[in-house]
Image 1 (tube, rainbow, N blue to C red):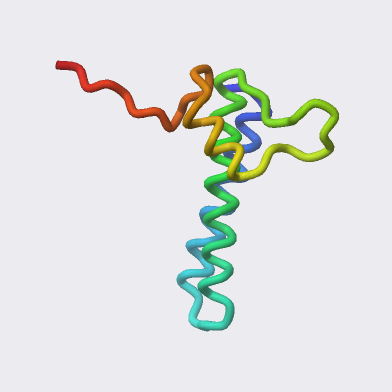
Image 2 (cartoon, rainbow, N blue to C red):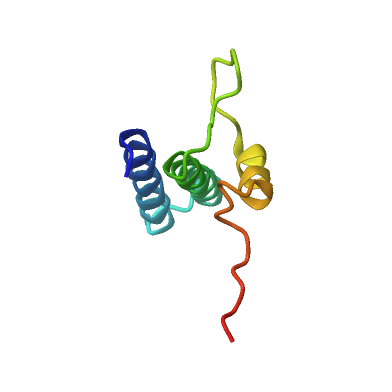
Length: 92
């Protein structure tokens, strides 16, 4: 696994664990928002790790920031190189 992909994957796991911790907190204050924010971040980082691992790019040319969640999903659905969300054919 590439170094950048491994870092993104580890950050994804951290966000997932934080969402679980917020879900299991005894206090209800801010629980739904925190859980959804951390789950969204975890899934976005996981998709970015998959894209980088398969040799794709997560940065636009001359952009400061990486691509967002929507673009990650679109890239994983449509890009043949990074198609990690494409359905696999069932072997008959």
